[in-house]
Length: 552
Image (cartoon, helix red, strand yellow):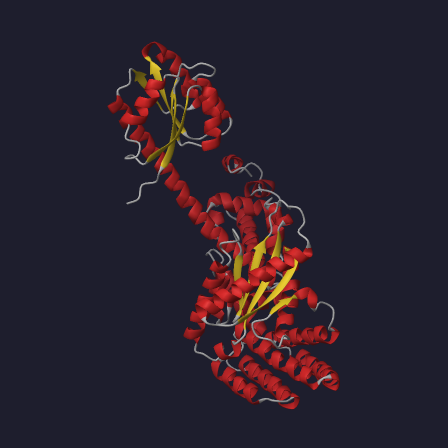
């Protein structure tokens, strides 16, 4: 077993004592690194601030600054390490005054080195235990915070919710207000081939590519997020320092991002033997700008004919009004399909026909290209929301492979739409029935730790389709809706029952009273006890004291 190394320093104005301590105590065997020595407290203070030792052995009586003043100043500057005092018998009463500054132990001079070694070993063991516990907490928090962070970013990218931003602002995390990102969008060039593999093989490909992307830039970037936005597509978000360094010229930023894009392409080709194209949005993006930028870069990549391409967004921004209009229709068509809105689908198809006819009048190859990528786009979108079964997909893929001109590609689009509608009206419930079933499930299980995954699984649809439908039907996210339902239940119980705040919190889905109290306070502007007190004066003095202890 590897023992965690800790750092120590020695402070004594008697050079012989320092040398004896260095030689007699088996520092290396105890896995303790001596980072330095000092002859008085003033020098030790500078050394400790620089080296941050976990353990200090210090004499009491020294010139310039004694050991107690050293400890007092260290504690005043936030030092949390341990100090063992070395003191003469006649100074022992004086040494006891260091108790209020948290001295760990005292060793009388002349030093009993065996006793000192035991004290050091005991103190080092305590330091290691604290450090290990802190590491465990940090690792757990990092894991949880990274998952939450990526979930928030994905919701923002896909424009599922505005909830995270205003909640983070309420929490007082000001860094989110200033955070900016660079964006790289990675797209598999051979997606149409990957998409026709079975589910297990597709998952292996996506797992492998994501792992490569997570490592490809790790030697140059301290942190960045890799998000699977849909099959065959990943968004790499690179946070800029919140402390806003001097502005980087756009040309320099573009070149840096181009170099990273080439690095990512090489890594995927080397490790997974697949070719990718990368779309780049080089302007720094605020969190609320991510969804719009994602769509713009995605559309540029979709209309690119080249493989292993690096596309800088500004090179095409605003130069193709027809292309922009076309993708607006593509999004409208996808929305109509997910909502089961036949009227919207018919209207969009009519507009699409006019757009294709106009594009064909200028350049038939351009029209074919737009239709081909429309089919690919819709296939990917419908797969992501679970609106196409495997047999239906294979039918559309077969048609797409045989479609060589505008007429055949238009037929392919209509085939895809019919297959989606068949699934929607066949084995799938309508969006209204799905949402009614979701509301019923939430009401029955509101006291449980509910999540999007559980609801989506219960309804038999994908997580993304559930999130999309929920926001479309309720004009709020699942989490906002669930919180509101829980708060209304809690208010009813507070008014019409004699249960404690802790019991009511559990019935409303909050296992911890403290967290329930804080959420309730944010929602209602007062604590649960204050809410109850207004309706039933004089009933909850003890609970009020508990809420004060919670810091509410």
